[in-house]
Amino acid sequence: MQRLNILALMGLLLAACAAPDRGDGSASGTAPAPVRPLPSAESTAEPAQPPAPGTASDAGAMLQFLQIQPPMAGSGKLEEPLTGTCCPGRWRQAGEPLDRENYGPIVTNPLRLAAEQPVSTFGIDVDTGAYSNVRRMLNAGRLPPADAVRVEELINYFDYDYPVPPADGPPFSVSTELAAAPWNPDRLLLQIGIRGRPVPNSERKAANLVFLVDVSGSMDSAAKLPLLKRALALLTRQLSAADRVSLVVYAGAAGVVLEPTPGDRHARITAALERLTAGGSTNGAGGIRTAYAMARQAFLPDGINRILLATDGDFNVGTVDFDSLVDLVKRERADGISLTTLGFGSGNYNDHLMEQLADAGDGNHAYIDRLSEARKVLVEQLTGTLQTIARDVKIQVEFNPAVVAEYRLIGYENRILRREDFNNDRVDAGEIGAGHTVTALYELSLVGSPARLIDPLRYAPGQRSGRAAAELAFLRLRYKPPAGGGSRLLERAVPAPRGALPPASDRLRFAAAVAAFGQLLRGGEYLGEFGYGDVVTLAAAARGSDPHDDRGEFLGLVRLAESLGPASARPASADSGRPGS
Image 1 (cartoon, rainbow, N blue to C red):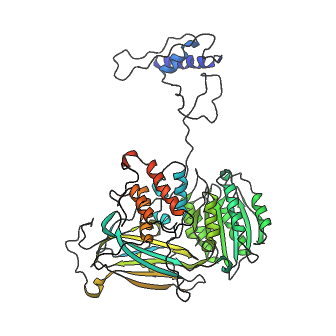
Image 2: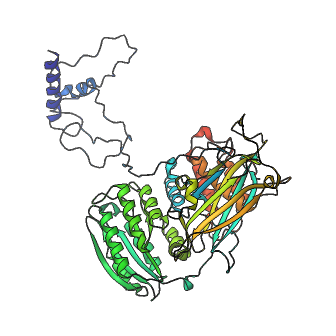
Image 3: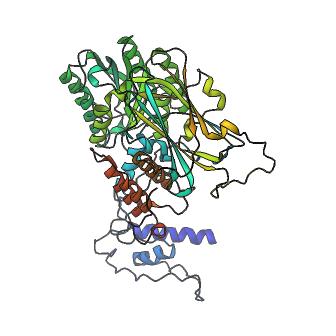
């Protein structure tokens, strides 16, 4: 019986909806029944009963009984109205764009006891894609997901004016500095700075470049293919007759649009780019294979051979398995052809794949959110983007447990290496381009410091003394020359602090401000009460020379992130921050 009643009610509803709509809220010439409120959970009234079968005027009451409520004004946006004559007015559905962006998981580096694990090893990273991607999301009015924030890429977005290496020495300089941590004066920050030897564009090696462009349907938006074409056109204008450019595209299939062409044929290369249109599925693996074939065809034995993959990373045809794509690029790099990835767009951006492909291809990854970012990466930093000066660069720091109680590496979570990997030349690491700077920060506490978070071991082995007690840590770096061959080793001791520490330099204070910002976006686990206002105060005081206003823009992004965060987390005054050290 209950089933028959439900079927009868549904039949009545369908009959009501089928009645012609006169556009004035009535059906079949009968005024609509008044809408009755549903009884609350606390009501002692009789349970609601279905209206007796009747005319279409019972439609409103029936909708209410079935708890099918018309949306309130402004509740959502309807891309396409529902068809049919049922239910007067235009139904609206709450619509938030489907977000399929993909970020690799990041587990923040933990605090380590120097007495238990005195050695920290990682590969360097010159990528900057996370910073411009975070900027894109903040400017769109939302905080980034924590896994989109790779803190080391935020730090390395900025130049810290480390010393230029001498012409007769290694291809990069190494600097260290020690100062109090701005978020806890009882803890210290150790800054390790690397600067690659700059090479003017007029002196760089000839380049064999393959533009590998995604023209699938997912690239059909202003922030994707149109911006991509303008970005590569900027790069084209920097090339000379000694360079070679090929253009490979992929959608459902891959194809060659432009055979190897002298780099000074700017009009021809730009015209080939302008003809590109978006449509179809995304066979990224097929495009990568075709691009490597073109790179081998125009290979320069004594030059730069590089593929520039420009895409949103949304591969959905052919080889779509993440690990298989990375393995494909790893195999191809053995031919001396590197891969740089340029990310574009939002909504389906695959950051995880883009970063890992660049790592596997001995290249670098950048995210292009606007034309000025394209100019920075492809014009101002052109030789750094194209010409590698040191390969497989690894850093190993051994902390002296007689001086250092505990430490943690800030960022570089997906660059951590095993201790034995440092001396294994078959283990891949990061590359340094001409003029690139790399910054690494360790936060640490000394033996006897009140800021220690880990209790000392009751049965700790005896600590060394003597000359070793004068050293805070011992720093080792390994790198390979671009032309190949075995790795080379650099070593230096980091002296332990004696007495009061000198004031921190502007470059350390600004790097610390960026590091704190990145950690706040990831939850600020180790920052205590240090907040966005403190970051602004610290960075503003250490802004220094800022010819392109990159640091000024950073201050604006910090303030924007504070405004987008929960109100309970904001200080009474956004400008009230504690002074930096």
